[in-house]
Length: 393
Ligand SMILES: *Cc1c(COP(=O)(O)O)cnc(C)c1O
Image (cartoon, rainbow, N blue to C red; front, side, top):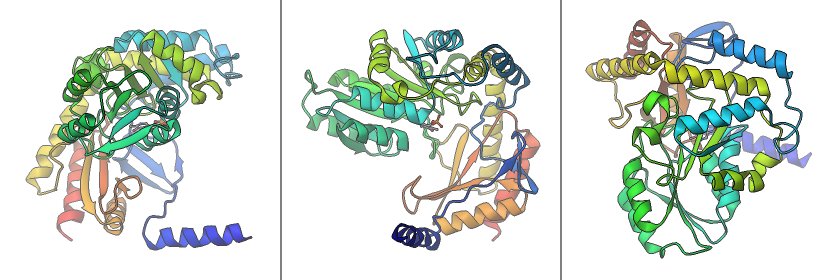
């Protein structure tokens, strides 16, 4: 009984602070429109950047996978859950990213906590961008290593922190951990500068490319490919299939030794059921479309360019460093962000309000995301809606 009393009190507090979260029930598939309850909205809040989440060929590949392998994988990868289609996908990912090896995880969350807790030792020092994703923070905590957070994108601050700690010695590694395209701010880490610091300092570079994989680099091979960072320079690459690839799941790519160590030690890999084989088949098909259909990236970036151009003409406040599919519009106050999001919804446009604790207190924002499935006329509707609710109120 007292548990419920305490929980209810805590929930009331969240409500009063406008931090209470509710799930909205979606019916049907989502593309540039989304059906929520009775209403259909223009959808500017999904991570389906290339519009692949309902691609007929991907769905067909999943169905073939179901016919061939059944639904469940039947066990963890180390027991019976690892099939030839999982293997084929890992080989394709290694080749695509220019890495020696790749390993599938059931989610990006599982990948980050698994990799960090398996590889970072208690005496290690982790230097992490202040705005890194919760899964990276949780992985760092789980590892027991000493964690320091440097100012967002600030390589000067990172350099200062790195110099405070002596050069890595055996048993005391140093790691720099960053996202590539930041999920809530939409800006890009200076990966080449970070790599140079790491190289000088004998420090391992760990990049979570969840939002860059499929979007940047040669044929969408990711942010590391875009800036030509090799496996030697950026030894740990994590990316997910739930964003641009339109499916779900994740992988880590790197050296044979790295991948073998994860198979031996990453608890979120070992003690969990392997991805359904049909999911691996769907991802494999999605990967082929990502690699061969450059028009999706071109269309996406044209839409983003149109949006930024028209929005700035209309006085909609943009973030100058966000040049990719994630366009934050900073509001500050949580309640205000929620109200703006609601006003847009009343106009049939869905844009999510992002609040604490996902982002820092008082940095609530609208997070507008674009997809290759959008049309220019839909971007125009968004601009109209935004200028009405942001400027004319
Ligand atoms: C989405 C995301 C994850 C988590 O990936 P899931 O597959 O959804 O668990 C990890 N890191 C970053 C940067 C992300 O944006």
